[in-house]
Length: 182
Ligand SMILES: C[S@@+](CC[C@H](N)C(=O)[O-])C[C@H]1O[C@@H](n2cnc3c(N)ncnc32)[C@H](O)[C@@H]1O
Image (cartoon, rainbow, N blue to C red; front, side):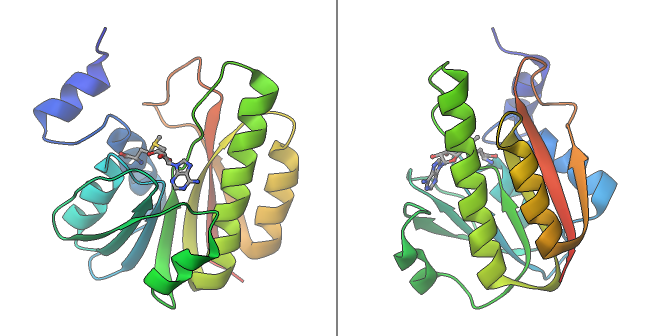
């Protein structure tokens, strides 16, 4: 069954319903603006990338799966590999990460795998996000959440949590938003 966000996304030409999560966060936190250099981590099928391009950002988007978005630089790679840095800019104004594991239904495994991706995204952020830059990161709520929250607070002056309206009610996902990288 298609929900209202999926139907709306396809009607509006977006590649996934996730776009409304980013739109929600953009509305609240003014994350990106025209001319910003933006890195999108875990970006396929590409709706966040589409939206960042629409805003007028210069977008580099990375995912292990192939995908295509006009006017964005697409990097097909595993974010766990250090060779990704060869394809990235030295610095970005904003990093957005919606990276998520294939869920297994085994809660402990899923939250651990999500934590590993979020931690890796934060490691990338430490290297390539400008001072005062912004970061959005998906994380599953569970055992590792408070560790990740602490780590985020050591990298950003302000850290906010946000559950977008388009997040499915039963989903464990939430987003942390880091503002003003130290
Ligand atoms: C929820 S989807 C992202 C949806 C996207 N934000 C959009 O709006 O279309 C999560 C993505 O994370 C990617 N991902 C998971 N692990 C990854 C890894 N190790 N390296 C690169 N991408 C990864 C998956 O391939 C998947 O495409």
